[in-house]
Length: 122
Image (cartoon, rainbow, N blue to C red):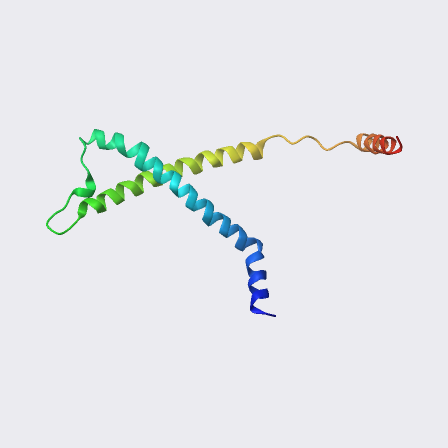
């Protein structure tokens, strides 16, 4: 088997394709969450703290402000992702709990077959 053929089989496996889609969607979703944090949530927090920019805080040569900012960003992102996953799980539970239509009775199946045969003859 050629190397190209082996690579093609590897790349076309379901789990590899699913993983690739997940990585791409994760990257796109990460941009949404980053924008939510940077553009929507951080400005009001900055306003509440009197406009302090944690990234600019230093102690001699240690940039502890950037570490604090990264920590706050992580916490905000974690809370946002948790909330979104919680909402998605609730939606999925509702969807799974939706009542399914009952299976047709044997009489209904027979009538459906008769209807289909009559339509085929017409």
